[in-house]
Image 1 (cartoon, rainbow, N blue to C red):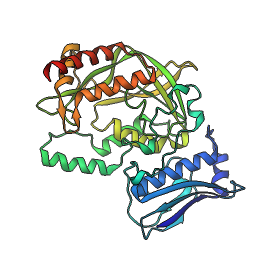
Image 2 (tube, rainbow, N blue to C red; image 1 turned 120 degrees about the horizontal axis):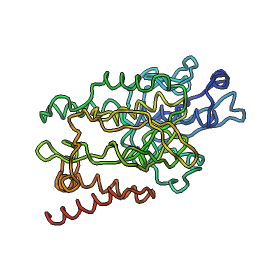
Image 3 (tube, helix red, strand yellow; image 1 turned 180 degrees about the vertical axis):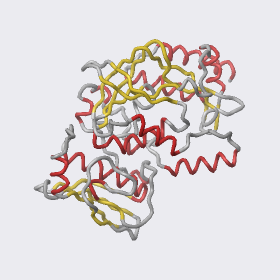
Length: 360
């Protein structure tokens, strides 16, 4: 077992203070979040404990201390830098000099966890959500490139059709284009599905939000996971028309680059969404937010599917990770738990459950 300490020196704090970016969290909290995220990204299951150590004079030294099972790993300081984490660089200017890099963030073994509960201020406008949102370092949706490697092997073995996922370079090009000019400021995201309760990114504020002109709808054909090519199911997407109630969450400016990398891997996995910016009404005032809407040019879009047919597909589809109905059931249960209204989803759920009952 080795003990690792990541530190930030006076230069990092002074450089941060002199930047044009206005931080909504303290520099100590910012460093702690970056350091723990970096440890998770680099060591995953090898990290069995971590904590932040605050010096009596934190401007002079601040450290995150961790114990690891990985032998032969050495750290050395790098030049101070500000902005989001980049591949191969550590939090607040520390980086790994040798040893394997692991990018899949997931819960640790033996009940140990680096889970950092969201700070209290995150839910100051939405106290009912406190305790209902999965911390990012406990999320299975905060995955690295090795997840794609695993699925590429599975796709080759099972003969999946070409284009089942988005090309890595195309996905990153899309992220850079969509976020051009926005990397150095806070980013709002409108969530209407699992991003609500499992954002898999570090969030600094939650608000309830309403989006006019768009609706939550099961209109994306699903042919893997909870369905098959022979018996496809459906996934939820944001499609034109109506209104959608959900949440908006804010990612602080210094974390936008790194956190949206995780978000794009998840939401643009297959390239069936279009990331766009929309005006969302919140009780605290309107915000411009990023959201992922159905790409109407994508072959998976099913624009004219009736509610009864959608319910039938969801009721009978099943794939390697389980029934399609479980996805709808989870969505409706979470919306209920979070106090978000969507009568259309509840009708679809009742109809699909009825069909499952008659075909069981």
